[in-house]
Image 1 (spheres, one colour):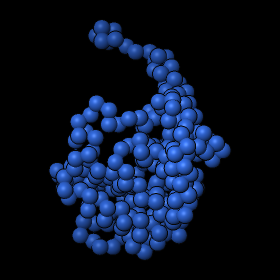
Image 2 (image 1 turned 180 degrees about the vertical axis):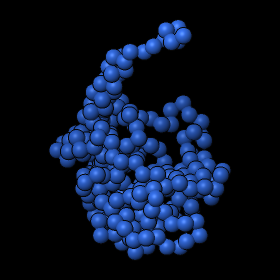
Image 3 (image 1 turned 60 degrees about the vertical axis):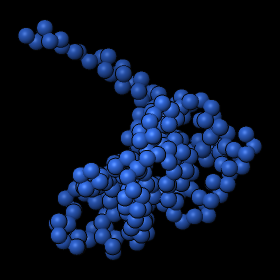
Image 4 (image 1 turned 135 degrees about the vertical axis):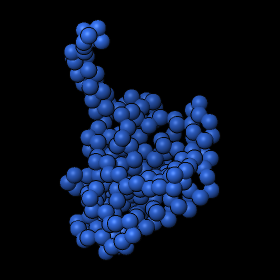
Length: 234
């Protein structure tokens, strides 16, 4: 326990001392604590993740206004052991050789563009209609651009289809990685909070984030719906 406490403290110190945090770890669950720490410290976080033949680069949202989402904002469960009962390709341990240099270069370019924006990690994402034409090297200036061009929230690419897309995902009010309740609990209790999260297989974290009550409310609403059977409709 003491070694884990020291490692947690050291990780927080490293994040506090940094201007930008690049999150490049292998498993989904290993990205959780740096995500919480970066938002708690107000740091720019650039996340890069590799699949077998696809990749994701994204910037986590800041602390102002309508925040952009983090890596976990699409999830309705807490991160758990993602390597359990999975083959190597499902664990994202095996990737095609071109993915790492593509994703890492995109991560650096996204970071540099973001640092040239006056709002840094609070910079808004471009609207869907703000893209340049296919062959145009320029874009119209807006709140979602820096001197270097657009600053997308996410860049998702595939070397199966050789395509990229730039979706935008808003922050999730009950996100286990960046919601206010999780971040504030971490700020207040520090390592003891991390210890409880790691010892309760996701249930404690889901309770703190509000996911437990969110899913219960959603299930209750589904039960209240008046479902018509196929026989009644005929």
